[in-house]
Each structure stands twice: as C-alpha cells, then as structure tokens.
Length: 422
Ligand SMILES: Cc1cc2nc3c(=O)[nH]c(=O)nc-3n(C[C@H](O)[C@H](O)[C@H](O)COP(=O)(O)OP(=O)(O)OC[C@H]3O[C@@H](n4cnc5c(N)ncnc54)[C@H](O)[C@@H]3O)c2cc1C
Image (tube, rainbow, N blue to C red; front, top):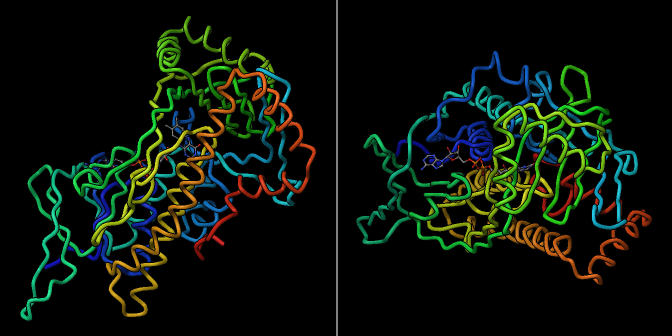
C-alpha cells in the first residue's frame, strides 16, 4: 500500500514549492527534510536581516504569486530592486540596467531565504493532503518492481528508509535534496563537477550612502563582489554581500568577521572593493563562506524519479540564478505530472519524465556555461581579454536592443516557461 502519490526528499525552497504545486492539485504528497521546522511566523523577517538571501526574478515572483505565497512574504519583508550596475574593477567597462528601460516596476526582489521557507511552510500547513516529515534523514532508497499475475513488470515503487528506521513508499520520488543530493547518489546518477576555485563569503552591511534600489556587482581580480540592496523599515542603507574569491582569501575574510576589529577591517575592504560607491561600510553580522562547485547531473530522471533544483544543477552565485532555475524545474515537473494525470496517463511514464528533462536541461546547461564563461573572462589577466571585456560591457551598454534582451533574461522571461509563471 502506498503512503502517498509522491515522496519529495528535501524541503528547501525548491522541494517545498513542488509540494505546494502538487498539493494544490490534490496529490497526496510526503515531504521529508533533515532540518527542523523554520522559525515561528511571529519572529521571522523582523529585526536584523538574515544572512542568506536570494534575488528572485519577476518570473519566480509570478509563480509565488500564483501559489498565494507572495502576499504574506511581501507583507513581511522583500526588497525590490529596479536597477543593476555591473563593472570591471580592473578596467573601464561598465553596464547599467534599469527597470524603466523595459517598462516594468522592478527587475527583481531580494528575499531572505528563511522568510521564504516560512511562507511556503505556512501555505503547506493548510493542505491536509501534504504530510511533512521533519528532522527525518533519508538513509536508504530502493525500487521494488512488482510483477503482476501475467508476469509483466509494472512501473514499481520507490521505497525509502529514514534514520529512525521508518519506511515510506510511493510510485514517484523527487530529489530536491540539494547540491550533494544523497538521493542522486543512492540512485547511481552520475554528476559532472567543476571546482570553480572560488568560495563565496556572505555577510550583511550598513552603508553610508543609500543603495537607491540598485544591485551592484564589481568584478575584482579575485572574483565578483555583489552588494544586494535591502530595504529595512523603509530605509535603504543595508546590503547583503556575496563576495566570491579564492578559498584562502575567503577563510581570511571569514576570520575577520569574528571580532569587532576584524569587522571594521572587513568594512574597509568591502568599501574599497566597491570603489567607494556607497561610502563607508559597516559589517553587522558574521561572514561565513561556502565553497562554489558547479555540478550538473548527467541525467535528471530515472525510473519513477526526478531531480530538481540544486540536486540537478548547482552554479556560481554571480548571477543569483540558483533558486530561480530550481523554481522553474519544480513548475515544469508539476505541469507535466498534473497534465499527465488529467489525461489518464501514469505520471511515472518514462516519456513524461523525459519531457520534463528536455524542457529544463538545455536551459540549465546554458546558464552553467554562461557562468563558466563569465568567470573565465573576468578572471583573465590577458590584455586582449581585458580589452574585450571593457569594450564588451561599455559597448553593450550603448546597444538598446541587446540590453533589452539581457534585461528580459534578468527578469527570467525566456525559454519554455510553465503556465503558472507566465
Ligand atoms: C553564497 C550563495 C549565494 C546565493 N545567492 C543566490 C541568489 O541570489 N539567487 C538565487 O537564485 N540563488 C542563489 N544561490 C543558490 C541557492 O542558494 C540554491 O540554488 C538554492 O538554495 C537551492 O535550493 P534547493 O531547494 O534546491 O536546495 P537546498 O536549499 O540545498 O535544500 C535541500 C534540502 O534538502 C535537505 N536534505 C539534504 N539531505 C537530506 C537527507 N539525506 N534527508 C532529508 N533531507 C535532506 C536539506 O535539509 C535541505 O533543506 C546562492 C548560493 C550561495 C552558496
């Protein structure tokens, strides 16, 4: 006897969104996550901003709107940005984008990850057909392929074991369990991996000069430094920092974050890295770092199984696209499965899973390749490449049609968009 229609391993932003999409369509969903429940709705999104944030595109926002997640989120704390400035700190190239250039209000929103998780959990709690297993770790996965009376092999079932010894079973299973996806490993799906030679330091700062709703990114010799604008209590003097640099440098910057003196020094280095554009910088939080490895699963699907989000692909944070791509995976997979069921076709049918993979893999691969290209171009000390990037950024800045195209990309408006994101 099945416990549900689908088991979703991983209740991060991507897994929770898939659970909501399927749960709303009356699927019986079991979602399993190793971590405890997010902080209570009372405190989250108040006071000091959380360390981990995501830049959500307009397309992701539309999906969260369709799922009725956005209004609560927006009533708490989201920071709209209408401009973007990107420049080469080693040269003269610079490009700027503005929402006005394509007639939209905002290019995107910065959202605290824990707030987004709480908003999704809040909606999921209202669905009686969604079961949450928290603080439950996946430790085993097999498929039992039943043989019916005529001897035909049917699609079979996923059987998982949790760390408390409990077993769960369903015809479909989804790996939304992050970049190191245990389910992907247990299913024997190979992954291509590229160490970027960088780590990302994150922290939160207060700046002398208001950010004015503009996201800024300087390409330094060691990697990109991003100042993501946060609006706190109506004031525009906070930014979330993502500083990608060499692992040794990342360790040094993290150590600076551990003391008052160190944080003062880190503020000086951040202000210098940004070329003083926001004046003095005060670091108001710790500065942990994360390794940056680009990974791409060689297959997104297996018998009755699909990978979504970071379990399928993880990429350099320089374009802030990880969550956005993962949300599109969730929306496309849900669309394919819900349509299949409406037609009376088994959602586990290999052709349906392959269609999901075909709709998502190319787009994700293109983004992974673009991140690699950017990193090479801006990491290069070759004079010809440096000239090309200076000319390239400033040249594109003057070419409106190409700029509009890039802005549409930043808004997430490209490719084969699922219906709920249009
Ligand atoms: C420094 C940094 C900055 C970033 N900035 C941005 C940005 O601005 N915009 C953006 O779009 N993306 C950004 N990203 C990328 C983004 O954080 C990821 O793409 C996103 O978190 C992936 O979501 P996910 O739900 O797929 O995976 P995760 O968030 O990793 O969630 C996986 C879940 O699976 C659970 N899990 C794992 N193993 C098990 C197990 N064995 N059993 C049960 N549960 C398990 C975990 O507890 C976790 O909750 C950034 C990444 C980094 C490192």
